[in-house]
Each structure stands twice: as C-alpha cells, then as structure tokens.
Amino acid sequence: MQRMGLCIGVKAEAIADYRRVHAAVWPDVLEVIGGANIRNYSIFLREPENLLFACWEYHGNDFARDAALMGESPAMRKWWALCDPMQTPLPTRADGEWWAAMEQVFHLD
Image (cartoon, rainbow, N blue to C red; front, side, top):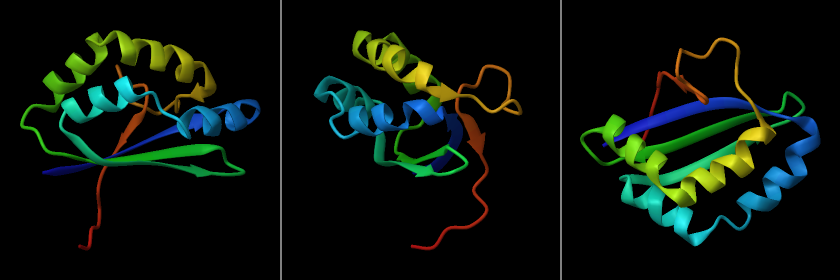
C-alpha cells in the first residue's frame, strides 16, 4: 500500500459549487475510483488560501496504469469536466500534472 497526497488551488468563486458536488459524488465515479485500487480517499480545503489537499491509499501495483484506466472512463471524464474548471493548478507542478504530487515526510498509524 502506498499513501499519496496531492495539492491544487480552487477558485474562490467556485468553492460553494465544489463543496456541493463533492457532497454527492456520482456513484459511477466512486466505482471507478475504487476500481483503480484507491481507498481511504479524502479531500481537504484550506481557506482563505483556497487550496485543496487530496490524500488516499493506493492498494495496487501500477498506479500509472490504474490512473490511465480511470482517465478512459466516461464517468470520470464527465466528472473532471465538471470539476477541473473550478480548480487552479499550482504553477510549480510537474509537467503532465494537474494536481501537484506531494512527498510524504511523516506518517503515524
């Protein structure tokens, strides 16, 4: 199992909508996420900086493959089309990233 954390900005004017859609994530999106071996997924919001922090446990053995399969899902593509315009990627993110990957520096079970 691998713990993963990512960060992205959220537009101030979109926070209410972002909260609303995440209060009722579509069941087919949840199924795709679970099928990609992702468990214990949370997204946190930090205001007034308007930052989102996502963290999850990855229980597979090839995250790149599972992420690519998620991206092929029509449900995920519709979800991302809804959510992506609400987000502001960090200018320092790596090439090809939307959410910026973070390094785990501490964990306690």
